[in-house]
Image 1 (cartoon, rainbow, N blue to C red):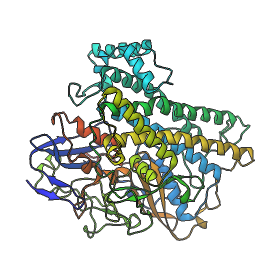
Image 2 (cartoon, helix red, strand yellow; image 1 turned 60 degrees about the vertical axis):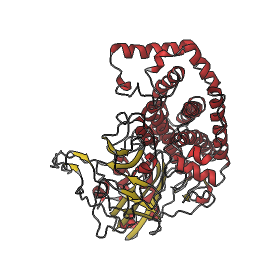
Image 3 (spheres, rainbow, N blue to C red; image 1 turned 45 degrees about the vertical axis):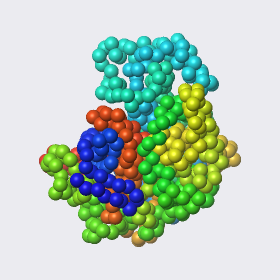
Image 4 (cartoon, rainbow, N blue to C red; image 1 turned 120 degrees about the vertical axis):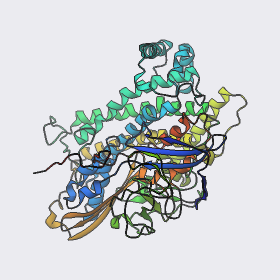
Length: 611
């Protein structure tokens, strides 16, 4: 038993009952979480562990930097493309390559397509079942569900009682068959679920609609990048040529017919956001209006690099401006520079890696990726069957990045708090409108509801984190339309350039160069750092959003965003830890960062020789 007061103001008490969740499911990759609850089932200690190793940095050493995007893109199969984008930006930064405006716009459209796709898949298919009980939907009155639908989203055309009755029959068939399929293994009898049967039926219906929609929106990636997942990118621009009157022959696949199709998909995305996604999140949040837990670092310490510039290469025009907020002071935005060795540093004191001096952090340009799997003396179990982890020692394959020594949260909520604090009018309008709609639905559900006006309390919560994703999806849809209109205008003015190949040949490169590429990935601030020497990659480091959020403790004892967000959360039934999953899923954890396969004993499984 021990009590630890952390520098970032958390009291960690690992006495009481230990609850272990391994694996955490409905995420990308492998993760373990352990919490201690007191006699009232309130979480007093949290330990988050990444249980797989990311080895891409090691694989990239000595390779051609123009090929790096194709390797790092395989870090993940969900947020597909954002690692490739970070990679080509890092190489172009190192080699001082400026890409044509058309290429910038196409990359922006592809990035925002990913944002919409990822956020919708996250909410409906990875996160919603922490709030929605599909079995309870069988008790719903379809007529009342229709009325609820028209109340929360008057313009959504699919709202008739007959439509919802048909969906209810489909769910009943699942249950009658005894095979709930995608709805299996939920804690459906847990009182932590608060939706009415009608709201459950509405949400499950949209779960199914989202399945259909998510396969449509990614066709934009197939048009501009050749395929999805893992669309093609290239250093110097994009790999798709424009021939506006062409027949989509190889080498020039972008013609007017394809562009019109892209526009129709953008419009579909905007409609889904407006009619379905945003109203659903607000309606569900109203049923959980008393559950404002899970904020952790979000209202106090957030960071982002900034994204979506109106003018290429001018960060002052970012439509979601970056910066850092520290200690809850929303009135002071600290500038963030990923090149500054004093700002972004990674620590490994509690990570299964080895540094020469583990009391010090390393900037990614000087980063080291050397695995060192060892367990603390207080670990219960064995190296291959851990019963209880020892958080006083090394306990995760995730490093601990810090901004100027501070643990920070990254992600859509961090971007939205930073944008709100910097006065971005679009974001301020969204936030205020959402809060008003939330309070209005709450008053319908409970006439005695007292309106929530404290934005820090509302946004700095699991609900706020989930809402920020929906609002960012909506914003991206509108920005995509602007990007598309600019692209058409450029083409009409005779500009069809999509690549700058002036520095394609390595003979034009300096002997030594280094660069950084940043991206507003769906899960948060993403950056890749590269060092190039004599035409080859000397060092490559990726600091991904889940590295920031899922980091273990640092040398000073600061806890990361996952662990902070769980502190103080009450649980209905610790054996059915839906509250832990609810908050962890709101981050959309992504730990799929390795192509390695290991046996339980650590032996090599296979050897592949590339000729």
